[in-house]
Every structure is written in structure tokens, then in C-alpha cells.
Length: 399
Image (cartoon, rainbow, N blue to C red; front, side):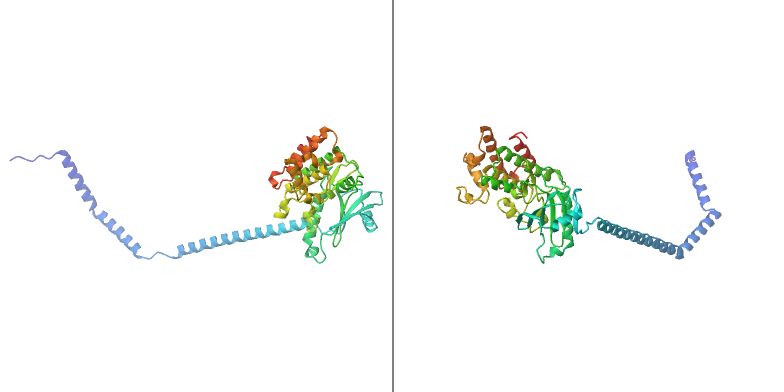
């Protein structure tokens, strides 16, 4: 009978297994495992101590609530403080409602002006919104005074302090304008129901006065002078439209608001006053743009329309209210009449016969008729800007 042979590897594996079993079932190991098992069971059967975790959660909640309340309180205080500071700044910057003279020229004294306004003055003209006076101060300075009554008797605006304050702010802004083709506001006086505006006195009067004398053959104005007047007017508009920030619109451009000095250099008067004072006499006598009546919208192109009418008056010598335009074939207005003649190639028939002279001047006047017709376009977008007009008119003649 053969004996079984065991490999050395198998013998080693069996020996290792026996050693492992003897180690696991050693009495000391078994006792240690049993004691560990009992301790684990004991700890798992007892409820956890609630005191420490609950105290931690309560403290955390209190900290979070305190932080949130502190943030909300600080934010509310900051907003309230900022609001109070803003109100204080607005109050300090608010223009006070002044009574009596407000002077912008060192040549005029307050007491002297009040004394001159209280005395009898020479009436230069009148309109629906006030009268024009000429007066001489104690120092010999001659001034022109326009007395405006922007508030109707019993109107709420008359008692509204914010409206009066807004008028004062705008007058101070107008007093800061400086251009050779603008009338400078030298002072104003606010009374209970009206304002008196003080300007330099212009002895030649307005463009309306000059054209009236031309129609009566009491004055001769050459084409050169008329073109200089047109260029000066549009330069004043360019200053208002492009150099002033924010932009200023005239709102009431017509010959009565164009003053002429001794050299017939034009100066625009009443800039922006029509918007400032609702019942101020607006340019309703043929000088207002059609959009002003259609949708009550006024832009810088509305000023251009009014300038186109003035240029037409300078070229034709006719007043826009002349009944002639209602009887003309084109009918209706000076602008339509000029457009009709230009399209028919008969623009020369529209020119004032008293200024027809050399052939070169006639060509300039015919070109000026085209410029006037473009300015009188029904659509504002089709009209040139005042900046473009300065270039267009200056190219007609060297200034």
C-alpha cells in the first residue's frame, strides 16, 4: 500500500489556518470581544444627552437673529440718513423766491433801477403779454424794460411758489447767455403778479419796425444788409441750439423779437420765454411751424421754420399776414407761394423790387429763396439745422 505524499505548500497553508483559528478562539481575545460587544449594546440602548446640543442650537439661533436685526437696523438707518441729507441739500440749493431787483450788470444799481421803474417811462410798444418801455437811469444809461404779466388774475400759478421759483431759475440761466446776436438780460424785477425784464436799449428798434418802414418807403435796406441780418439771426440760433447745455429753443422767433443795433446787426430777444410763461404771446401770425398746431410739439427744427419765414420776409418785403397770399394762385401762405414760384421757375417774381440790383446779387437772392423754401418744409426732418444754415448763407456772400 502506497503512502500519500503532501506537498510543502499545502502543509504551510494548513498550518497557518490552524494558527489563525487558535488565535481567534484564545480566551483573552474572546473575552475582549465580548466586553466590547456589551459596551456597544449598552451605549446604543441609552438615549443621547439633550442638554449640550440643544444649548448649542439655541445660541446659534440667537447669534443669527442678532446679526440679521443688526443688518436691517443699520440699512434702515443709512437709508433714512441719506434721505435726510438729500432733502437738506435740495433745500439749501433751492432758489429763494426773491422780491425786488436782481442785477446782473455792474452798470445798474438796485435803488437806481427801482426809482427809474417807478417813474413815468416812454412806451415803445405793447403786446398781449406786456408793454415795452424806454427809461434812463440816474447814471445816464438808457435801458429797455419789458413788463411781463405771466399770471392771470386769480390763476393758481399766481400763488404757486414753485412756478415763480422755476421762472427765476430760467431767468438767471438766460442772463448767463453771452453772444453778439442775443439780447443780454441785464436785470429783472419780480413783483407780486409780474416780472420786469431789463435789456440794453437798441435805438434802431426791431426788424418788424424796419420792414414796416421799408414797405412805407421810409427806409432802404440793401440785399447786403438783409443777408447780414439773416446770417446774424441764424448764428444766434446756432448758439442756442448747439453751444448751450442743455439746449435752448427760442419758441417765439418773429421779426418783433429780432432787435437791430445801429449797424443793423440782429439780436434775438425773448429767448425761451414762451415756454416759461404759458400765456405769453406766441408766434401765431404765420411764423409757427405746422407741428406746433398739429401735435403741440416744438423742436429746434420749429425754430428753423420760423427763420425760414423771416428769410422769406427779407427777400420779398411782404408781411406773412398780407391778404395777397390768400388771393394768390398757390394760396394760403408766404411759404407755399415761394414754393410754387420756385417750382415754376419764376422765383425772381417773388423778390422785393427795391433790392434787385447787380446780376451777382440776384443769383444770391434766388439761392436764398431755395434756402427759405427748404426751411419751410412741412416735415421737420427735411429742414436743415442752424449749424448747416450758417454755412449755407455764409457761402452766398463773404462776411
